[in-house]
Amino acid sequence: MTIRLRTLAIALGLLIALAAGVSALLVWRGTYDISATNQHTDTVFKVLDYSMRRSVQSRIEQAPAPPDLGEARRVRSGAVHYRDQCLQCHGAPGVAPEPLAFGLTPAPANLLAAGRTWAPGEIFWVVKHGIKMTGMPAWVYRLGDDEVWDVVAFVRAMPAMSPRDYAQFAATLPPPAGPRTSASTGLRTGDVEAGRRATERYLCVTCHVIPGFVSAQHHVGPPLDGMGKRSFIAGVLPNTPENMVRWLLQPQQVDPLSAMPALGLGEQDARDIAAFLATLDKVPAK
Ligand code: HEC
Ligand code: HEC
Image 1 (cartoon, rainbow, N blue to C red):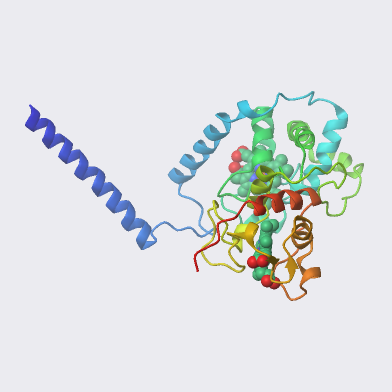
Image 2 (image 1 turned 45 degrees about the vertical axis):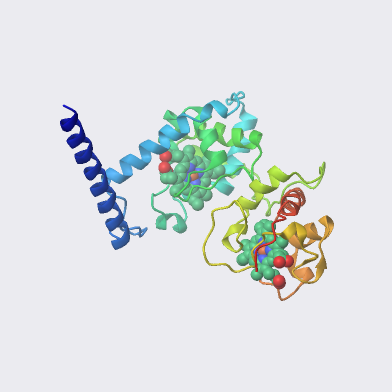
């Protein structure tokens, strides 16, 4: 009996090792086609889509309860955000997405089905947090919770609109506002945790190695480890919290030759990120 059990365990172990080996081989050979010009295979798409739905459903408890989504004021405000921030990828009744959307895999869904079948909390969660490994952005840094609910109200109202209804309704909406940064009123002092989250979203990790972040492996800017201990920012500006905010908002005003772009940070985000950077005190071994 024990011998049989042991044989079974060994066979199982070998099988798992074989499966891991084959997977590693497929990865190493680059077998899976990651090009956006080839759709996912049917099985892969179904698994990904199902995982996405389950992932959303298991997290919506964290979303606050929906307000009254039927209010005309909400639908109207949501329609403005939708036109400016969603339509280019998802289209609207009688309106095709913009050409950039045609290059995305998975293709951004037409939201008529989501508007009909997804619970308001699910749409809220997806719009706020975005979806990894698709082109769906997280809107949390552009839209406040109330504005996200406005968008949800519009997405829910959209399936009932014919192309003609939508065209008539859209003609009554105010023209697009210019680019927006976070409000500069009611600023608080920098918050380390908020700064850590903002650091992740403003693409800082695409150019810098930052402790605690998974990032690209080729770096355009210097590693930010030990930033809290350095005397100067970019070698020119004394490292004080105010100067760090100044640097983050307008690097090129400090150093016109710097390859660090102004990323359109709001003042509050800059304060939060500065507070976070000040906690990085491990000087890298040289
Ligand atoms: C840059 C393109 C892009 C923009 C802009 C964009 N999305 Fe998406 N969205 C996607 C992609 C790609 C997916 C994932 C594929 C899919 O499931 O549709 C997605 C998925 C979704 C889903 C899940 C739909 C489903 O049936 O799977 C919802 C809901 C959604 N987006 C709403 C929005 C809203 C509302 C906005 C505007 C605030 C927005 N999106 C802006 C690209 C975009
Ligand atoms: C496109 C690439 C790029 C992005 C994105 C970027 N940086 Fe930079 N950053 C640089 C480069 C290049 C430098 C070096 C600048 C110089 O010395 O002129 C730099 C310098 C810095 C410095 C000074 C470092 C030192 O050693 O003194 C800090 C701090 C910094 N970046 C923070 C950030 C933060 C925070 C973000 C995200 C909000 C960010 N950077 C986004 C390229 C980038």
